[in-house]
Image (cartoon, rainbow, N blue to C red):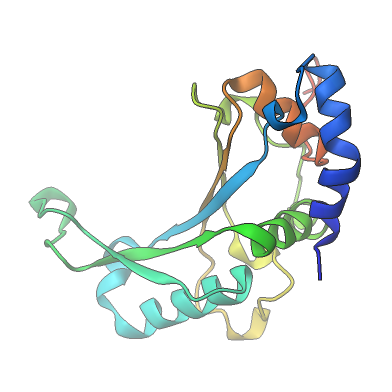
Amino acid sequence: MIPRLKEKYESLIVSSLQKKLEFGNKLMVPKLTKIVLNMGLGLDGNDKKKLKSCLDDMSLISGQLAVVTNFKKSISNFKTRKSTPAGAKVTLRNNIMYEFVDRLVNIALPRIKDFRGLSVNGFDKFGNYSFGIKEHIIFPEINFDKVDQIRGMDITIVTTGKNKTSTFALLEEMNFPFIKKGTN
């Protein structure tokens, strides 16, 4: 079964972006490549119960098994040791990626308290967009009663866009709620 957003992308968004960005070929239109979800734990990574609950929450949010990330080197000021757990991450591709973006834009982001929109400063020069969420409980898959601690997470959206403007146009067509200029 094809996800709703992917179907919309193929039928409407590609032709709209091709006209808007003045591309000669529809294959030049930017598309989503992958989405990386990252949840850092810091010192809580040494606690097995907290690590397991973090992995379970990430797996519920993404619909895919989360992977433990480890520290690459020891830093005494941060009390980190090499090869100890630092957090969890998930990389989404293909249909699961489109389903996640659909749930993120239409269900999760509107549930954020005092949400005014996503910042337009999260783009890098390669056409990727990153932003952070302070509470992972905005996703409907998470049961409030079983959460031991509210954690933040980073979401990175990797696209084939060559610059900020093409990626911004793609995400705007996918209904990402960006802060409009002149709005506070």
